[in-house]
Amino acid sequence: MSTSKPPIWYWILSIIALLWNALGVMNYIQQAYRTEGFLEQVTTEQLAILDSRPAWATAVFAIAVFTGLLGSLLLLLRKKVATPILIISFVCAVATQIWWFTTDGPSTGGQITGIFIPVLVIVFAALLVWMSRKATANSWNS
Image (tube, rainbow, N blue to C red; front, top):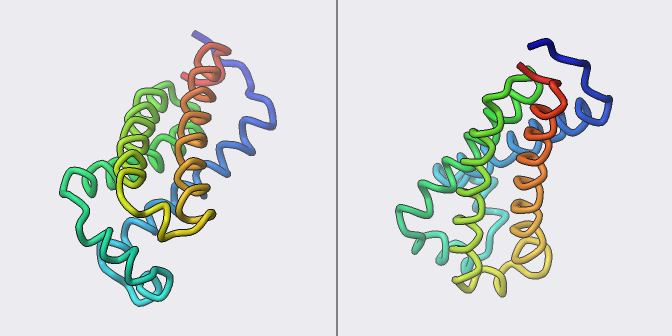
């Protein structure tokens, strides 16, 4: 099967996706290693919530960000395998945010970090799944 050239918006969104997911990986690493920068950004209430996070929630957070980064890279490389990887990322991102919304996280983070960013994570992950499926349907990838 031959592939056709994707439109410019595909490249722009793929680069944004790669950067976005790199930030997600960075966020995960900062949380996992409790970096000084991370500790300066969170309140004691948020830290208490994160400290009480169950192992499954930590695991799906890690899977979400690392598969998101890999899937974004595969979008740039125009590979069909990006779709199932981005679906895994989406499912894990939803699970992570469901956990967040069942805690006091939204009330401790304010409107931006407590509610807006978690919703944006889900929307963006869904957008990447849609985009990868569109790329396959339009023969932009192989």
